[in-house]
Image 1: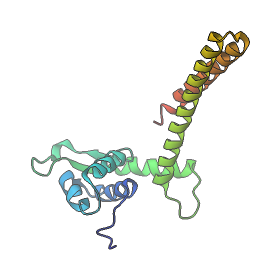
Image 2: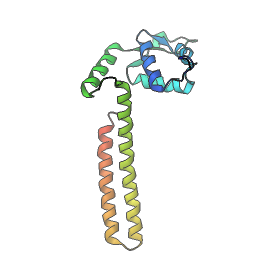
Image 3: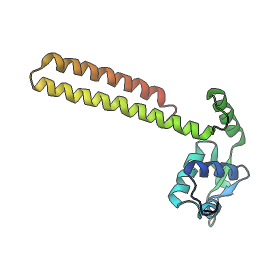
Image 4: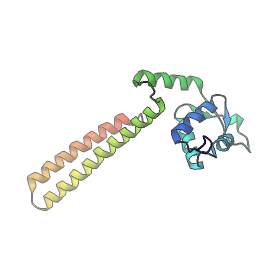
Length: 162
């Protein structure tokens, strides 16, 4: 499989879009460049992801045929890279962008687990109370309240990142 026919991941597309955005690029050019290696949905997702890392549109340079003009804010991108490298220890060969995305997915998964645990314990407690097991039902509801408190705390702390 040649490099032109090989499918790229959203992460790889985002990195290449950021590279293109350092000199400035039109949306139409991005789609033309990556059409052989990605679907339109993947390219749109990669553009959205690149916006999180410093890509922004320049309204004054918008063209009717070429679409939105994108550029990378060099200071924001450099600040973001420096802050991430200082806060995330990387081993040789690690990809910073990939690590950030993995951490974001882990945070979302932690929130889902805590919320799911709270719901499951609340349902179990209700079932126990309906079956006449007062102590077990009350204990399950206390557990549900605790899990809900943990979810709320995680949600408040992760809100800034997500």
